[in-house]
Length: 542
Image: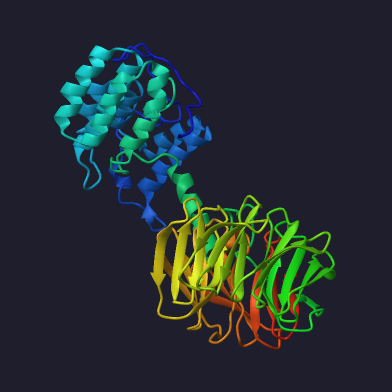
């Protein structure tokens, strides 16, 4: 619900028997017309209307708590933020004078396409609910039959209002109608809703100058190439992040693996890094020192991927040896081995930490939901999975498959909610922290950004080399501002998520880069894994 009133004053006039409500900061502007000096109308203020700028400043002064300064500006500029009719309309709504509200409303310029019947329905609906709240059922029924029904508007809502006649009490009414009542802020909410249909030149939207300032800040952030700053953005200067704030320096090279490194992932608390290699091992690294602290041996073929449990105490590893293994990170022991008939390509933990998912090339069990004890909870069939991911909110399972389809399943009932056919081979997927977007690496040398709520391709990132091998990408930086991907040309490619512009090509590895992972607790750090048997840690020099 919108913020409640900070100040209320009571007046004796009210059509429904309730004390009227007004808000000091909402009753801004004098009772005269908003333009007393026509000469100001066409004046220019650095490309904007001087009149509009003046009116917004007056409104802002009221909102900032400077009524004397606002009055002085009104006097000197000879303009106010709203006419006498607007002030009267505002008061009539807040004081429950519904006949007057409807009369005044018909005199205003409305936004294009607005039907005045819609506004009358909103006003009469409020009147009906207030009468019900007073338990004046006879008058409420009269309004329903003689004032709402005759509008012939929104039959479904009319039936819903009719059902509210059965409410046992005012409290029951407010709960059933999801309505705050007269003593709440329902009249303020009504005024805000009505204002959406009135021309903004007649009735300026609340906090308009603050809204414009916020839009300005957001625009500057979107245009900032290396935006990775979470502090306040000053209004005094244009915002630009220095390139030094981006982690483009290879600060550490980890060389303990003796074979190609295919996968890296930071622990959820950001204190450890896990790596999976073609040398059959998994290594856990201490992020504080980047020294090896655990080495897991047990797979008999290359380790393809891994996943940290939500509490970082357990690790899942997948292998070309057709197995999935669960490991106790602290004790460095294997807790469970699950056999498959084909290579296991991917895995993901459920939020509870007692279930996990596997993706496999086995057509009989391409996706399986397991308990941590190795019991099958649910199984999907009839396709093969290259990679899968669970959205951070735990609601969706996203899989990229051998038949060039993206399949999206509802976690709660396991049902397929979307199936997207692509014309090129996909090999990996990762999900944004807000669970809205998926990154899909395509063999056509592209990384696709998909909106998985709207099932819509949003961006295509191009430049990296990818054709034969599995290359993994990730989101990174503050608010997932960056898209990062490995490449077969031994480089790391970085795009800005907002417009898919390529902003960095980082070198250091000597062979193809298979996987990248951003530290979720450190926006200035990510890791890359390569066929040159090394892992590189990338930081900034700020």
